[in-house]
Image (tube, rainbow, N blue to C red; front, side, top):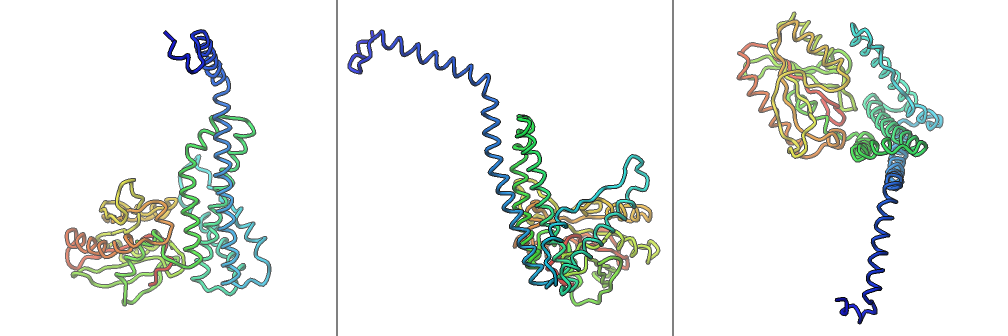
Length: 375
């Protein structure tokens, strides 16, 4: 039956021996992978992760070099800024005790103010020749470098710990989230370049809308780094506010809205908040959605102030958001996001006409980082 194998020099007996050899090798391979398969997979993951870690280190060093270069060019420090910058990139923040949650918002708000003021003072000392707008941009630049440095340190920690302990599941968990971590790191590199050049970022959509509403109108400053303009629109009294620009700044819109409501003894009929929001995968960048509630990110202290004051005075709070990815929010503003600002203003006008009457007062708050967006 095996005569056709003869031209190949394989007889029936030889083919039987070859089959036995192949079967034996397969059994041995199966047994080998039972005992060593996980180890092979572990070393493969460690090897892949070492490449990602080197890339993170490169991005971290690139951001630090850009920070030092920009600080020297703009701030013209009189001493070497490198040691102080290196110390700033290791800065940390300890949240207040939350075992007894009563009053934790005000504790957190206070600690954040202390942290922000110290950070800004440190940047001012490093850049004595910089003006206020440039100091804000430089502060954002240092923050971006700090975030990249923190990501690198955390990834390195778990990589080395997993390698040291040969923990398959520790390395596996790190590998599972690594693509998302790398996306965020790449976005932060783009953000540091935008901060160094003072370019608007995706998160500046809210301030951009407010700036368009406030154009050529008288402005005044309220609370911390927030500017306000009052004007009439369709027979209603509009109070528009945004963080003071064009330096990188988010201000304290919660305190500003709270102050404006108190100034009018609670006689505010509506609050409309405009902000960028993270889109779902598959959604179009620049898409607009309407909703209710305080549209503001961060750690929650500003949102708490707005919700508390609005609920106390029975003021409805509406939100208009523009969709963008997390990466688009911190990178230079895309054309689709910038072009959506006029459509948001149309939505604001429609909401005001539908939900309010002539003579009523509406607060319109543009939320976000106002870098590159003037008054």
